[in-house]
Length: 211
Image (tube, rainbow, N blue to C red; front, side, top):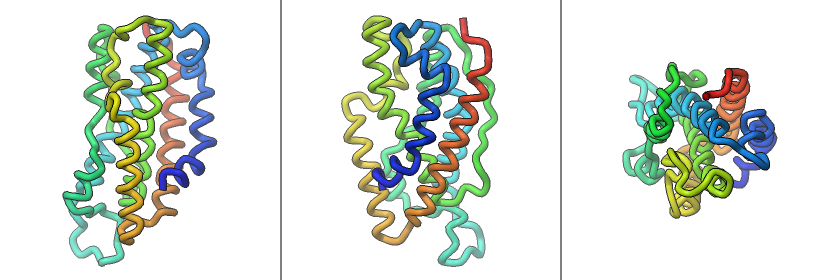
């Protein structure tokens, strides 16, 4: 599942990396202002999408839904727990506070309807940012110094980032093998959510840089 998801979202991933804010952050001379801007952008993305995804994942099954209806996620509690998910928006808010910045105003929302496949595809997208965050953190520490102020989000899983990512992949593979998810639907959901992330980042990137 992880390989298929990575290949399907590769083009959008590359488009995100080419946005002006990301280019500055990963360029030869990132500044503290570039990092603060990145935190604001990511806080808007996570504040918008994460609450809806997490709520959809544990939402009760719709009354009267048939056995084949996946419009309302209904994974067993142990399956949800196995994903090892923890909200990251609070970490971004804490990082912004370190820099003296208030969290951006957000209105939690998600593509509608957030069925199980779309939900898990969206979770793949958001969890993937924490894996990439380790790379960003190493680069910023090289240019901005160590310790890097406000790096809770970038270091969210610490040295366990790769292990967490592998665990997520195993759980998704298990759900697919047990017929609880449709792999093509998860991939379509990931592509749709990643495109929404790109649209948000591209729009927010037009805002004036944080001081």
